[in-house]
Image (cartoon, rainbow, N blue to C red):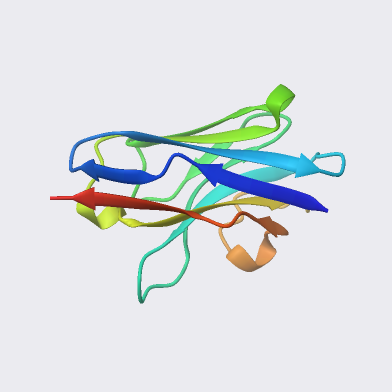
Length: 125
C-alpha cells in the first residue's frame, strides 16, 4: 500500500509564494505519474499539475500555467509544487495523487490510484 503525505500549506497574502511537498512511502514506489489537485468549498476537485515519475514531463492546468511549477525528487520519493504569484482564487485544499496506469495528460481524479490527505492553502486579498 502506498501512503502519500502532503505538507507546506498555510496562509499567505495575494502575490506571495508557497511550496508544497508530498512524501510517498509504502511498497516499492514507481508510479507512471504524480499530480496535484485542489478542491475549494462547494467545487469539484480540479487538476493542477502532473509530472511523469521517470522522464519528468510536466503538464499544467490553465489556471496555474506560468505561476506554479511541479517537480520531483525520485531518490526521496517526494513531489513538490512551487506556487508563485498566488491569488485568492487559489484558496483550496491541495492533494497529491499517484497514477499507476500509463495515460499521460490525465486530468481526471478518478484515474489516479492513491491520494494524500490534503493540505489547506489560503490566500488572503
